[in-house]
Structures are given as structure tokens and as C-alpha cells.
Length: 456
Ligand code: SIN
Image 1 (cartoon, rainbow, N blue to C red):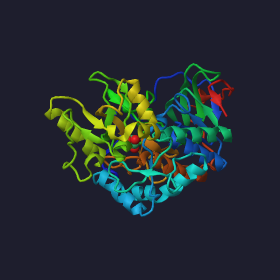
Image 2: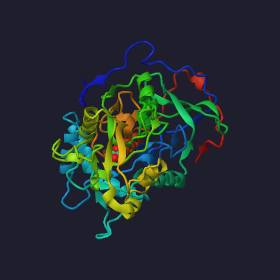
Image 3: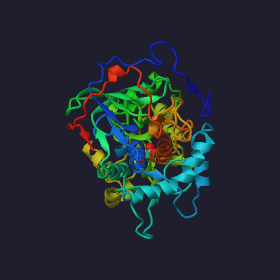
Image 4: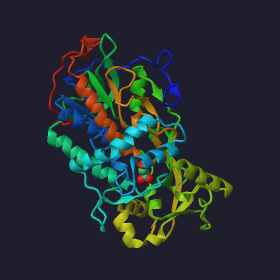
């Protein structure tokens, strides 16, 4: 057991401590810290490490902006509004987490969150402003008793955050390696982290297996939605970080708590892979869940009706569907009208229309799909895993803030807050030079070039 609930200890030959079969690294880069992944968590960690003087390298499986962050629609939750407080945000998070959150982790999230969002804005992310007050516009999503979701571009919050952070990383000249699938953690003779091996896929002088040698590794590889048939996650979300951590002997927690988003565009029973998300913010702005006869079924099921925590709404949809011998329900937001759809939810409107559904004139068919790994690689409040020098941040991590069920829009915030904490810990620790790498001869001292896949 851990403070977060259940723990899956890596056990058994062939799992714990084993490495993937791979050729010896043909090239190496030396750094103080290597960040694996380029969503909000990874890039925030990288920016803060670099700003503190650490030689920082970001490696990412596809392009810098290809991870889950770019797809986040609804927004980022923080107690920024009048009358709201971290304490109320804490209460909503604990309730959604069904009694399995780590309260210290949640308190850290909600108290440090508002300032972290302001720093994100200062770093260049442009959030939507209220036409009346000129302050950040705040909406509501499931499980929140207050309007506390900041958004950008209407329903393109993640895309704006990703743009701002990628720009900032490029402006700082942080070294990046794209198209690089992380393979294994390198450890020194004392079992401390000493870097990672990677396979760069087919671009630039770094093609093939290489290594970044660093005494601190930050896993920010995102989720694993692609292990399910239908998911909101992009193709890169295949659980690589958890797999690496298990092979490295790190503890993982709460992997069974995979969150299903209630309202994903239903494209038929055989739809596979990434499906278009219909943000909870659509319900936050007043859309109703209805069955084929147009009857609302979440009223009476929970005091917050369609805005109950998302596990409750997902179950409500599946229950009603089963009762009616179908596999989906409908989200009715025709009353928004075309102007509001175009201004507030342009991304969702375009996605629906691309599939022949006009939400201005007909209800949107929806069904739950895999959305978020609430568990992951277990960390403390500084993002440290049980392997010295290995950190985890964002969806790959289990800080304990989500418990059994993540509160809507807490994930971008978790990435921000805990990435800043990780950077502080890394900067304090990287002053000690790494020891010799186990199997050092294999890692070698290959040349570092400036191929197309390598920037910075
Ligand atoms: C949404 O926009 O509904 C997704 C937000 C989240 O997963 O937190």
C-alpha cells in the first residue's frame, strides 16, 4: 500500500530491472537533466530547469506539439474567480476523487495553482477574457461548484498552452530531440539515474539508438489511452513512461483508475483510436444530455445533473443506453445558436461538422471513451519517484491528486504546479556530478550532431 491507495510493485523476472533489447547507443548527449515528453508538464519542467541554469534536453516521441496537451479543450482549473478559494477547489477535487486522493498533494495543487496559472500567462499563454470585466473568463465543468475553468481560443486551451510553451522553449534555445522513442533508464553503479536510451526514428544525424546522459530524468510522457479501442488521446499516448518506470524498478500506483470521458463524439460501434472530444465545458455552458426521445436523464441522478463528476455522468449514459438497447446518448446544445457555437466552441463545431453532424440543428451523438490515466508512476510532492534521480510529472505520474477520478481540468494544472516543484528539486540536486554509467562502454562517447530531428 502507499499513501495514494493501492500500489503495484514491479515484480517478476522479465519485468523489473530488465532492459529492452536494443543495439548499443551510437550517439550520446550530456546534460544535467533530460525531460522525456513535451506537453505542459515536460515543457514547464524544462523551462524552469533551464532558467535555473541546468543544461536541459527535451526528448519527445513525435514533434514537440504532438502530445495530449494540444488536444485539451475545456481548460485549466484554478481558484481565480471572486468568491472562490483553494479550499473550495480542494473540496471539489476530494469529492470527485471518491475518497482516494492524497490530501496533501491536492492542497499543494490548489494553493499553488492560481500563481502557476498567472506565471503561464506571463510566459505568453493568452486566455479568453470576460467581455464584461476584462478579467480571465471562467466557466464550469463537471464536479466543480464554482466557475473556475480558464480557457483559451474558446475550446482550444491546450493548443494555446502548447503554442506558448513550445515558443518559450525555442526562444530559450533549449536543446530538443524529436521523433525519439524513449527506451530505458540508465543507472549508475549505485542504482541512481544516469540518463535514458532512445531510438530516434528516421530523421537527422541522430537516427537510431542513442543516449542522453544526465543525473536527473523527468518522465512527462503522458497517458496510455491508446491501449483502449476508443480514446480521446492522440496516437502517441501508449504508456511508454509507465513501461520504462516499471523496467527501471519504480513503483506505480492506481493504474486501475482509468477515467472515461462521458461525452466523446459517437462515430459508430467500430470506431477505433482517437475520437473527437466534446468538452465538458459544453455542458458547463448549458448543454443537456438526452436520450433518443429527447428526455433528460441526469436530472435526479445527482444534484449537479449533467455536471456531476465525470464517472457518474459516464455511468449514467451507459445505464440509460443499456436500458434502451443502444450504445450512445445525445448532447443537445441547439439552443446555443450558431453565433455562440462559432465563438465559444469553434474546434468542437468544426469536428462535428467534419463528421456530418451540425450541433446547431441536431443533438450530438455521444458515448464515453478512455480519457485519462489517474494513476501512474508514484511520486512525492517534489515529483520524485522511488528511483533516485527519476522524476515523473503530468499524466504519467501518480502524485495522488486525482484519487479514483480526476476532477475536470485539474490535469493541466497538475502538470504546471508539479513541474515547477520538480525543477526546484532538480536544480538543488544536479550540482552533484553523476557517477560512471553501468555498461558505460556500451554508451560510449558518440558524436553529437545537429540533425533535422535535433533542435536547440
Ligand atoms: C474537457 O474539456 O471536457 C476535458 C477536460 C479535462 O479532461 O480535464
